[in-house]
Amino acid sequence: MPYIKGKGPSVVIALGGNALGKTPEEQLELVKTTARHIVDMVGDGVNTIVTHGNGPQVGMINNAFDIASKDPASKVPVVPFPECGAMSQGYIGYHLSQAILGELKSRGIMRSTANIVTQTVVYPDDPAFDNPTKPVGSFMTEEEAKALAEATGCTVKEDAGRGWRMVVASPTPRRIVEFDAVKDLMDAGYIVVSTGGGGVPVFERNDHYYGVPAVIDKDRSAAMLASGFKADMLVILTAVEKVAVNFGKPDQRDLDMMTVTEAREYIAQGQFAPGSMLPKVEACIDYVTKYPQGKALITSLECAAAGLRGETGTVIVTG
Ligand SMILES: Nc1ncnc2c1ncn2[C@@H]1O[C@H](COP(=O)(O)OP(=O)(O)O)[C@@H](O)[C@H]1O
Ligand SMILES: NC(=O)OP(=O)(O)O
Image (cartoon, rainbow, N blue to C red; front, side, top):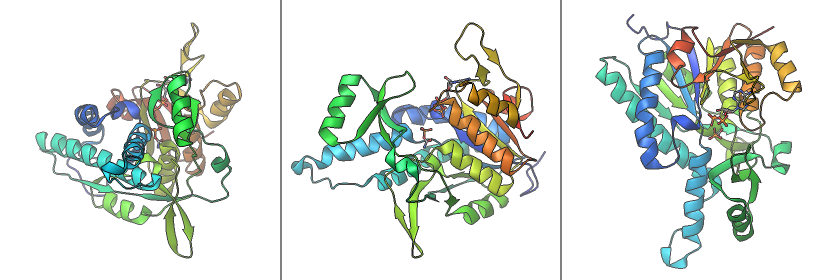
């Protein structure tokens, strides 16, 4: 089916960490595979917005500037955290866009990409600012993490049984500043890479925006975009094909479908790990609650195209 601008179904995709890798070199290689799966999924018929995480990347950029700026000989200035967030969006978007363009071209699909460095309004009184929870940067041992906290004053925490990381506040996204521009580009047929890392968090004061040192959960921002656009689907791509109950236990059971009521029951039972699967399920609940005609899908990058065809993954619907 040839692509007809604005006529196909619409999808907001949220890419997890396994789609990007941890270093620029690794990312440049991994995004080729990511782009193949994205184009398999949305090819020439789907209106698409691609959002992505930035935890490892914003931490890496922040760390590099932090260390360099402490050495007077380097003449590297102090670079604030929101600027690091914007840099992470720019560099990840550049890699993704390059890879998607290459994939489209190799298949003869006449579409293009557009990257938008996006700002997301958050509220100053958000309680998240009193309790940093969002892991950024690379994993460390407990000793390394505590030494970093001692040296820089940052907060460090254990991340879902996988090691220690620096953590920053993760406020609730309230509004995407560039929402209209993203919509116009999507309607014009571009595959839009937007709201990376959830968008750079900003406070809005007297008609101006001010960057905030925090990282928004990208799945929550993706859900807000999807409900705002009344997108037909929110697709959260991570490292597992399906969401499970009793995850990692001998009696693990993979789920094909959950209603919002069932998802809430599983959350109450503690089935989804905070900091990993829980925010994804919550984002899906948020989207289908605000836009009940929508369908949310959680699956792996490899299963993305099959998931969109309804063949696999976990679907979350209203009810
Ligand atoms: N109930 C569950 N079902 C499936 N996966 C789960 C569950 N609880 C925790 N997980 C873990 O959550 C991971 C997804 O979270 P995370 O790695 O933080 O996401 P991202 O892909 O956005 O980086 C899965 O790969 C899986 O290891
Ligand atoms: N911003 C964000 O959610 O990044 P990660 O997915 O890398 O944690």
